[in-house]
Image 1 (cartoon, rainbow over the protein chains, first blue to last red):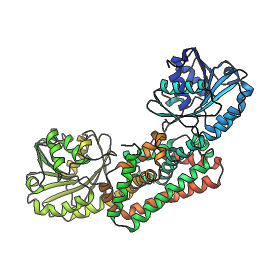
Image 2 (image 1 turned 135 degrees about the horizontal axis):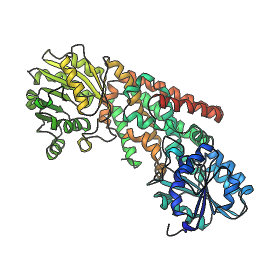
Image 3 (image 1 turned 30 degrees about the vertical axis):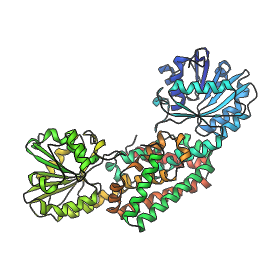
Image 4 (image 1 turned 135 degrees about the vertical axis):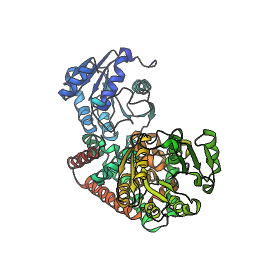
Length: 284
Length: 284
């Protein structure tokens, strides 16, 4: 914060879902003016009621011309569309950060912006199984990795803004030049996790529900995620998700064969290996 | 508690892992004497240091003859072995409850006990991804379902004891006469969830670890479970686990085909269905 003059900045957050709403709430006390844009009239009404922003609007053309920094926080495919529309809406120099869950498609779009834009990709790896402004929380990003994928054209100033934003949110900045690598990693650490959760939830019969405990709850949680958000994420990361999914499916087929054929001693050895990998991934 | 005279009872808990340790801690203030048995000298030392029980012993033959109620809280296959040994250790009338994670194998063993034993099967659906007495917590069972699987021979007195124990722990008693049904449901709500978690953890490359957020953490959590405990659970529920696993694998293959072939609109419809099932299972 001390390294970036947030208090002089007019910041526009576009998309007041869980992410955008949480960002707006966290940023508002630190900036000169916070503009918030959402297409949904009920979301705007709630945003006004809760004082999420200084100005709440349904029209990007109305508020984006006043912003020094634009943060795009809608589902990924809308972000891409908005990046294409930005040059028509905004005629002045401006910094642009997106917080979409996949980075390759967005960074390709950001790269095509005219020179007056100073763009950088971002992805705070935080969230909840529930979505929408109702569940927004300025503390959502605390302790979370905030990945930044700068473009070759991204300025030192935009990098400082990004780094400072992560600190302001209590997040941990993680820099990665390659948006495709981001999407490959996230296929494992997020997108396939969602698909596993979904498959288990779809397969579980109603009669089992009195026997649900913390284990099921923990794995099933992601099945509650916004279908629209997940659709955009998977649509912009299809190849990497299929590859990661095939890898996990191969592991599952291996476990299935083991359970059907090997002895419990052999199972236990694989369970130990899994426990060791869980620890190696920093999960204990 | 008011309906069962815990304060007059001498209770022995066998196995001071996460479950047994948590039970001992929760019960000790309410009973006349709490005996705790564990084969591991370090666990016994920790139990003494923490005052988990009035008497801590490594030898079931030494303490079980003094108990009015015996609670078996070791991994499932050890519970079965212990049930077989009980008639040699205990010559007086006694109530026996086990808290093993599968119920069919244990209830078969309990059914064979001589008439001086009054046995009932139980399974508190609570836990953590970490195991051992170090992580024991008397609040572990609060709000959790505590499933009881009485045998045809189980007395009204043992049922009262069980019901009252659940209330004492802050758990919600769930009665189920059929231990095979318990194991079939738990295959979905617990055992397959573990296997999914394990497969994902095993498939995830080290380089992905800086990109881990709450979603992965939540699904991967179960991979930390005790390998020995999981081995016993799966060994005593192999057929039901394979059936549930095949059901989930079929859902995953279906999702895989959908992602590879259908359009994002078709994906979104399935994601909505999964979200609706997640809600129907009481998860929102």
